[in-house]
Length: 208
Image (cartoon, rainbow, N blue to C red; front, top):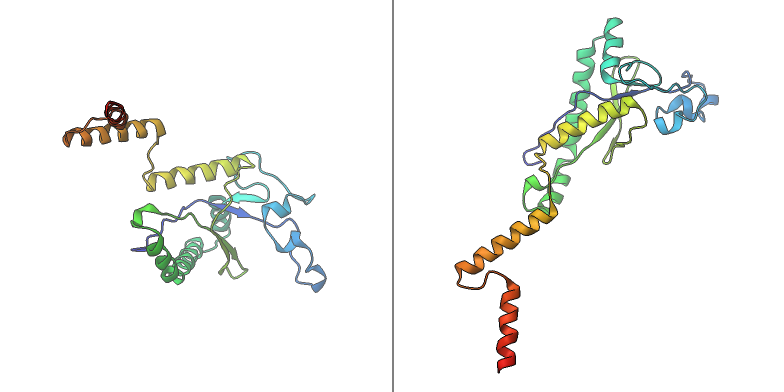
């Protein structure tokens, strides 16, 4: 956030309701019609699961790539739709920038100490206008299907690469710090290890 920098993963998941939409007031209580949440719709008898990551346009959960193919075949302005989605995401991040930045300055000494993975839930209406439903601070990384695993694992790989994560060996790090501390002691003319110092002090005390 200082400066604000967003990395948008180009792949994602498109989820579909398991009941055909009707705007009748008698259908307002039908969650399978008005919600696309996987956790809700998987319990409906009409739910169709995706068991093949390569068949990404099958069932009630597609990849964004499959959705783009579907819209393109029907002559829809896909590029315009996703430019609007990008614009929606950017403006949402800008709207919370002052609050997030103040919290970061209060909690973080260095801006590189923190990153945030956000999940944006967007719905597209019949006029192909995107609407923001919610932003998830902790988007689900569960992989219940091969398609989930394919998309989310690749996203995490990109995330770790962007953050420049390095493998961490706690024992190796402790040994390195011990050696560095020992070198600093030697440079001051002191024993390399604190245990040696403590032992010498005990010997001197007993001799006294």
